[in-house]
Length: 198
Image (tube, rainbow, N blue to C red; front, top):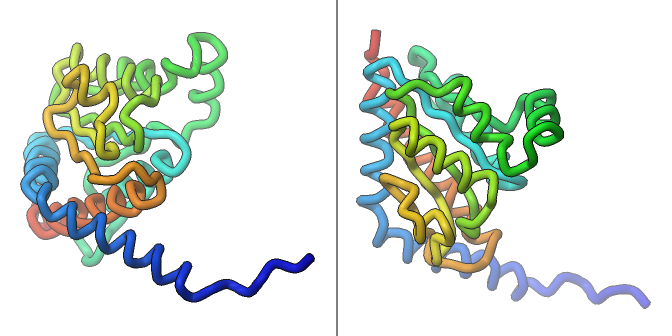
């Protein structure tokens, strides 16, 4: 039996749900601003943004890193940003030899320097490999940023982040939409703040 045609009310409900979450996100504007200021300070002093997550959050990590290392809205020098999700040989070798929960932590141990920023993205805040990487980042003395959903999960419970954006939703799609909005705000501000950086 064929499915009924898409009811426009379904579309409207999803758009309104996204709007509602983003309106609630206004309450966390200072968290997003603090994250942007921390990244700017790191980049000014030769640091890098190292971002990581799984699935859609991996895509968000790559998206943010690409906007910074390439360009977002204007021509300017490239900014040092990297997603730890893109080297398939490293991910599979580390996952095979040390376990999937170590795929980002091991890369941080080999790549990160004290002035760097670690950005962990997990809609639940409980992704084992993101949590482990943030623990390692803490031990290494990195500034740690996190993006999660409403509860913050283990990232919140273990106080793993210097700045933690908790999107006020439990709906994965809405959380991810808010994460990339926050990422775009971060990119736009950094691009203006650092455009004259030599």
